[in-house]
Length: 276
Length: 257
Ligand SMILES: Nc1ncnc2c1ncn2[C@@H]1O[C@H](COP(=O)(O)OP(=O)(O)OP(=O)(O)O)[C@@H](O)[C@H]1O
Ligand SMILES: [Mg+2]
Image (cartoon, rainbow over all chains, first blue to last red; front, side, top):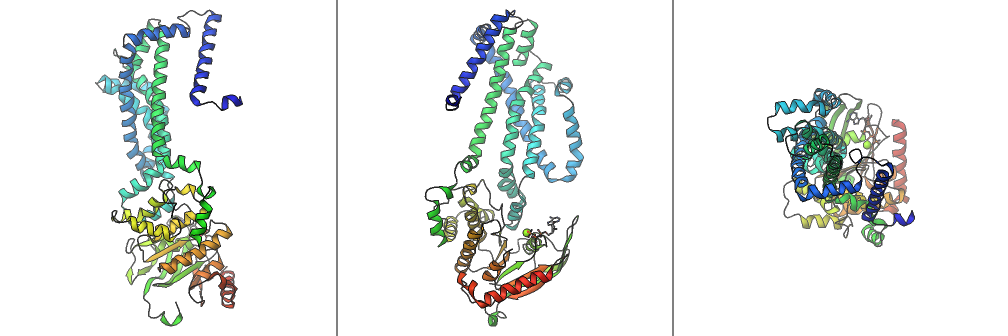
């Protein structure tokens, strides 16, 4: 265990992936499952090779990605002003939040068919579903983030004649950013689910959702697995991109956690000089 | 300030019969009157929760009195009437800004974003934090963070410096050193100061006037003048005048309940 602890992350991931694949393989071999019920990693690998080679996987993946990214970005762009309104206006909160919460009790899969009736464009109907899925968790985090701004800092900004806009972009936004980014991470993975749900109800010859539905109808279970893997990779990448963005934007948090200069080598000496 | 030139110095800020009740909360202040002359160092002491921070926020223009008025240089106080500097007990720095960026904030907000770096550096040097310009607040000790807050409060040359228990979150030793630091800074950069504090020793050592607040709703119950000479030094805590004033303040706090 202690040996494992010291290894780099990529090696840990590699080891766990190999263990998972091995277990899966043994399960299929020993259980003698039909490959239509549970294909083994070898079957899935072969199928993967085929759809990569003929370009199908890439084509369908790109369609899905082209829905996921606008879904996330637009959902976020709508959530920011909404969240600001909810956090700032008690009236708006009392007016809107019951409906927002009630709307969360309805599964998106139930509303999605309606959306495809209302929105003519296949593409935008799917993006809309993604937006709907992403919107709420991001909104909640924006409200929580804006509410966490310390009262002293508001007093400070007001005493310095800050305009409303300055208060937003120099105080509220950076103060809320850590919580907003946490919401964005959740939203990043949810956006993939949203796009997929959109493709389920609007399966018009493209997208990973379409590929999933058709391969299931054709009992190409190994292709279903390939699609699942592709979806997981897209979700992980989206999450990773937001995490990267977080690391860049919240550099101060990473730096702050790492060191305390007063405990450092020359901190106290400098203090003594300053105090004289 | 010695007694004889008080009459000569102008009144900077005055509160006349100020009362304040929060809309959905307690009636905090009743008929509070006080006068702060330009260049004065005024300390306010009183029990916890009595309304000291509320009075400070009124003087900053952050709250409007329910009745009575606050005059700045004879004019009714509006927020932004004149630049002020504020230091809070804690939580006053922006954790996502470096020391330099925190100190620079007032200048940024006032729009003169260009020729500021000399001024920012001057303030950082003044509070003894040269070498820490690009460090984030979470990496600083409590005392260093309050130095940054003081630098930021003075960078835009305010006419009034408001301190709300600036050293309240520090340990006793750091607190004593920071009080001396404040004296040093104040002598280098004279500004009118209104300071809320829990420490009687701090109030007497630093201030010309010590106001005592008490009651519910609260009033200013006592006003003690400290006749220690300037520049003040920590050694003055041994003098008879210091003990006389400290005792007077303690009695006043007890009397005002
Ligand atoms: N924004 C507000 N709304 C309602 N009540 C408030 C508000 N701010 C303060 N109060 C109340 O006013 C009273 C005085 O608070 P204040 O913070 O001024 O006390 P204080 O003397 O500064 O106390 P401390 O020494 O603990 O800082 C308290 O009862 C507090 O609950
Ligand atoms: Mg207070």
